Length: 72
Image (cartoon, rainbow, N blue to C red):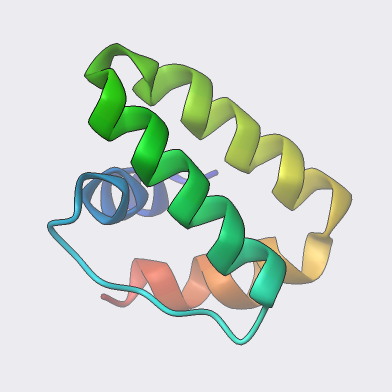
């Protein structure tokens, strides 16, 4: 994940930015990660790692959604 995407994804997970994907699975993952971080902010690194693993399994997300997130 590029640094700009990581920065924007961090803001999304903290609720500072809003992003809705056309991919339901990604939306569900983001919501799940937001709840984990709300419960314990120290979960950020683990959540980012889980998102990266998800993107590795679904390269279209890395291509389309990460590109869209970088433009936020």
